[in-house]
Length: 195
Image 1 (cartoon, rainbow, N blue to C red):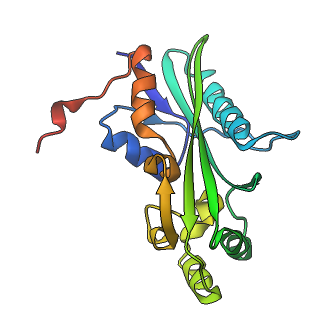
Image 2: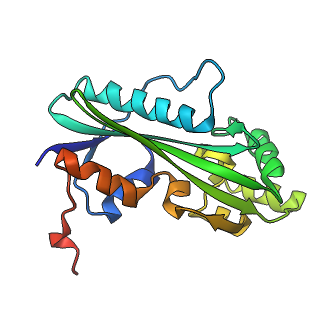
């Protein structure tokens, strides 16, 4: 069986791979995440995921590398991770009472083989008060998450409805990822799943 490397420092992606019983190690990619030119959210996440995976695969040529990137998009405008608390407040104000899309791009790279795909999930927020938004941002949960919220944490209380893969919003569409890894010889180790 090939070795799998996750090219991400995201604790959420790490947790999802662990939940799926996929054996892996982590090497965080340091490639720049700036995209030039006008691109759609799905193109952006696929390109960034591929950059990350290629970066780590270039120094680990005997390993399969998994890269991923997530963005939030509202009416075509992309929201990445907020840089400041005010930035997070502004993002959530824009999302309040609206439906937005979460895109996660995934790239699997092994030498000259590459698999690239994305998932899209629609999320609708409740109409939020200024106090609700500011109180949430003050918890600190916003600061390392696309769109300024974490659906798997306190951010779940902002969400009115979701259509699509929940885990895609967390940061990795794990069910599809498991299936896309199989042709690369990466399979789940279910031998330790019973406690």
